[in-house]
Length: 65
Image 1 (cartoon, rainbow, N blue to C red):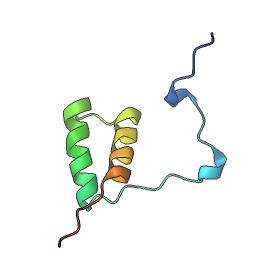
Image 2: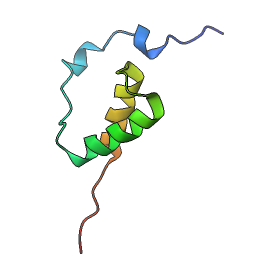
Image 3: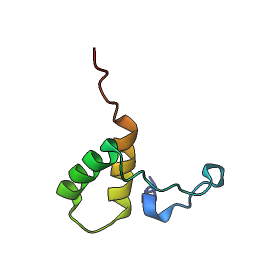
């Protein structure tokens, strides 16, 4: 069976358009960045950015009653 290409070897789909920067002031970004720094170290990498983007999407603040 053929091996899948690693994510960094694949081209970005045209339908996605240009990538947008993270909102670095949001709570979701800050908490995701903190977790990513612990997991991947301080250097910037594609895997770290993917981790952050998925964590920001999952982040939903709890509504106060």
